[in-house]
Structures are given as structure tokens and as C-alpha cells.
Length: 153
Length: 153
DNA sequence: ATTGAAACGAGTGAGTC
DNA sequence: GACTCACTCGTTTCAAT
Image 1: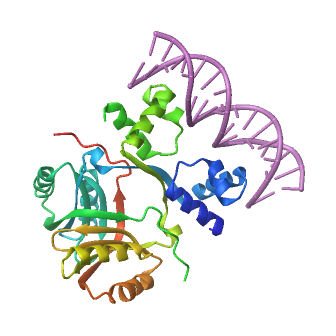
Image 2 (image 1 turned 135 degrees about the horizontal axis):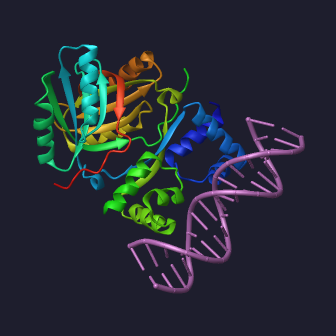
């Protein structure tokens, strides 16, 4: 990961669909060199994939919430089981396994408040290992599309 | 948004860099038709962009945490000011503006625990509007790369 | 590791149904 | 609105450095 690799990663985070020629032009290197760099970064696992960013409303997920969940007993088996089933719920977009006060954080996206209510009642209430949860509505999200590489020190 | 549009969106969420020809082949339509559909989806704002997915460790963000924050007074001015300054902190990857128990959720990524400690002390402690915060380490994240379109009903 | 050139494959628009 | 065809442009390989 030299300066050139960092620059490639930064540009691809911003626009993953620009052509290899355009990428090379912006970096001041030959297209073939650029292509080889990108391939090496992919081989090393630095670049994990390319994804389209879709308006949540178009996916009928205009209403979003964060649901923090506590489960008991706090065993490996219970955590793994809940993690898997939560990830399989269609309303759940991300599952975070946490330490600290809460055990899980679920990023949920649904059509409207009715569906959020339904999610909480139909999906969460039924699970015996859940001993508590708290729902926070998301009003705005500011996401860094291209998080920069932080300095070493 | 008919079935074809949904399928295009799903495929581009999974792999944004596949060629238009490949996309058309998988959908069983002509490349020019596919290209026109993709352009229309972009024009309508359904497709918002294409981003490379980068290994956080390569960005020196191997250690991640969720920090929930309460601010006071809960006025529009205070919320907007904190939102902007939080989004500008290099360690912060996402800022969620919430309702409910907490006012903000910060998704933070840093090199190691020392830097997380530094972030909490140097960035958050100094801000007078913050009346409380709670940090949860992220041990695992399961993200839906291509969240499906939820049914209308 | 990087390059330039050549072969191959993809993007694009006009015309047609 | 979708398709075919022809043209242009980009991607990829490879021998040379």
C-alpha cells in the first residue's frame, strides 16, 4: 500500500464504474499499469468488491431504525444463533455484534412505521433469548462515501 | 420499478463492475435495452452511485466502535452543528441522527484501541454540548450486500 | 514494476419494428 | 419500449525495458 495504491482505492471508492483509462489518466500512469495495480489490490483482498448504491426508498426501505438488543445467556451458541437468524430477516440490513451495554445492534429498513411495528412484534418478540431491546428511529444519515486511509502513527 | 428494474438493481448491488453486456445476458435482454434501463434508473435517482468496498484494515480502521451520544439543548442549531463537526472527524465513518434515547450514533473506525481512546478524549470530551456518551466495540458485522426490495404490502 | 502497441471485447446511437 | 447492426472506444495481453 504505497501512495499510488491509496489514490486508486480513494478514486474507486468515489466512483467504482469509471473506466480503467480514466483512472490511469487521473493518476498519470499507463492504463496497463493501473489495471495491474487494481488486480493486485483485489488479489490481496484490499478491494473486496464493487456495489451500486441504491436509494433506500426505491427498495421500500424509506423508514430506518437502529434496534439494540440484549440476549441471555451470553454464550457463543446463543450469540451465533441470534446473529444468523437476525441476518436472515429481510428487514435487517446489517447486524453488528457488540460488546458493552448491548449485545447486538440491528440496522433495519422497512416501508413504513406499520412495518417497523410488525418487525418488532413478529420477529423480535417471539425470540426467547432476547431479554430486552430499544428502538431508535434514524432521521438522517451522513455517510463518508470514501473514508480516507488513516495515518500509521 | 418493474421486475426488470428490480433485477438490474439487485445485480448491480452484487457486482457494480460487470459489463453492460454481461448484465443484459443474465437478464435475457439486448445490451442497448439494458443500458437504457440503467440510465433511466440513474436519472430517477434510484441508482445513486457505485462504490468499491475496501477492507477496513487496509484503511487503518481495523478497530471499530459505535458511540451513542446525547447533546443538550436539543435544538435544531445544536443538532446541525454537532452533525457537521462529527461528520468532519476523520475517524467517523457514519453519523446517524436518531430519535429515542440517544440523539446521535457515530460509527467510528480507527487503527487500534489507543486511537479509539484518543478519539473519545480529544474529539468528544472537548465539546460542551455533549452531556453523555456510551461506546460499544464492534466485534463482527454481517452486512447484507444486496438488500432486496421489500414487497409493497 | 512499468510501458506501448496490437488484438479483442464492450459501449453507444441510428434506424427499424 | 425493445432489437439489430455498425462504429467507436476501452480493456487486456504480451514482449521489451
